[in-house]
Length: 102
Image 1 (cartoon, rainbow, N blue to C red):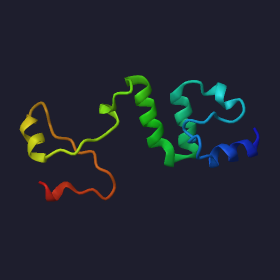
Image 2: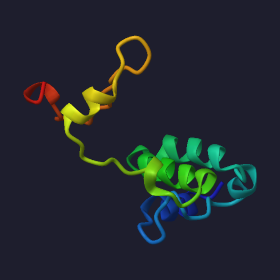
Image 3: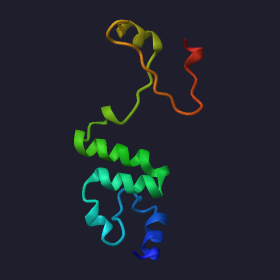
């Protein structure tokens, strides 16, 4: 294990660490994208969201429906919901509060 190689990988911004080759034998140990994402999570948790988007795009195609959020009106969502089988689920980011819309 070469600390200089890991430091170069850790500090890289081009290509982004989630796209860059892992140092040394770790690239061959982590040929699977999920394994590489686990290593990334250990060293660069700030880049995990980007790696997840890349992972989803790779396996689900370049369709952005799975990786982008679309602003919608709560009234439209409410009309499509059914209390017994199609609930409304909020996935919130830090600092987001939907209470004003409710």
